[in-house]
Amino acid sequence: MKPAIFVFLVLFILIHSDSNLHSRIPQGEGPRIIRFSGFDWIVARSGNRMMPPGPNHFSGSAQNVWVDPSGRLHLKITRYNGRWESAGVILRGAVSYGRYAFRVSTDVDKLNEHVVAGLFLYRDDRNEADIEFSRWGDRAAVAGQYVIQPWERDGNRHRFSIENIGERSTHLIDWQPESVTFSSYRGHGITPEPQDMVSEWTYRGEDIPAGNRVKLMINLWLYQGTPPSDGQDAELVIERISCRPSGPGKRYW
Image (cartoon, rainbow, N blue to C red; front, side, top):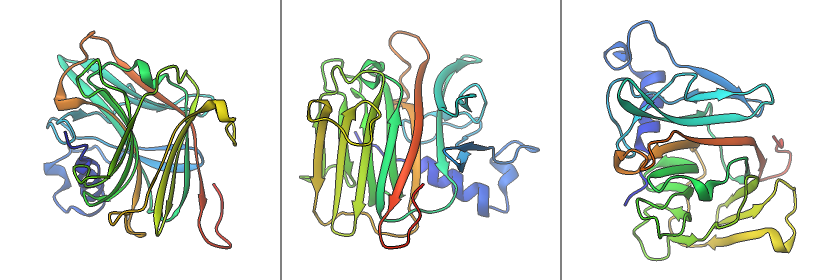
């Protein structure tokens, strides 16, 4: 099981640099941009093709990706015209070293076993840091994992239980030149109480993502393209994302 996210980089390149864009995206349709947490995000879209990860159909529709009146981001997997459509967004512009906080308003432990929710930093398949929630098709598996790509290398993955995490949780990636620290805790507080900490893991190996040309992304998709076993839509709600960049004089957002 490889949580490759190539689809999003492909879509970003197509949107911004492909002179034959109309051969890949229906004519008359440009990239859809949404505003969330004070920044612009590109909505992932694969058209009529299935693309990795999964593979999946990724929809650019407002039925699959939207920001509600309270400013919360919604990603939703839905069935439309006989096929299941997944969702994802990419922050417009590159990011670098810093502490990234994702405030989630969904009980991710209750996602169907075929659904994958990802919060991650991505440059390419060898420069990627992921927080993922999924049972990867196995109802008995724990649903949380932190990953540094390549995931199959010993010491590059930490799996953990998110039982009783609740509908409000916070997940952090503290990405520095010599380490990446992941953590998850219950609630949306700035500093977690000890009893609210769910998991924490620091990686100091040789696969720390390089500090340039990295994209911040969020997605919700189906493992191996398999429909939810309960036949129901799946939704991920993000209250807010914030970043504290490393280095003096950097602006917090």
